Amino acid sequence: MAENDEKSPAPMPQRSETVTRENRMDYRENLRTFLFLTILLLVFLATLQLYLTVQGLITTWFADDLVPIINGGFYLFVILSGLYLIRTYLIRQKA
Image (cartoon, rainbow, N blue to C red):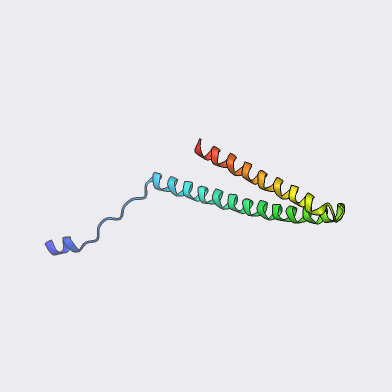
């Protein structure tokens, strides 16, 4: 009889309410992350399209002699705006 006791399977652990709550929270967190990344991708694509459209507008609206100057100013604006957004995001993350 002692051998039968050793070979019997261990009892299955009961699912507790906290485990299901954690699973629901993980699911919600994963869904939020997925939605955030999807929206971020769409914003990136829209920004790229805007950037290319502005380049076309610059060549259409301004004389050929002014296009390099206007493009340089636009590039500088894009770089400074990007640096500002990165700096703001990083400062918010540290706080």
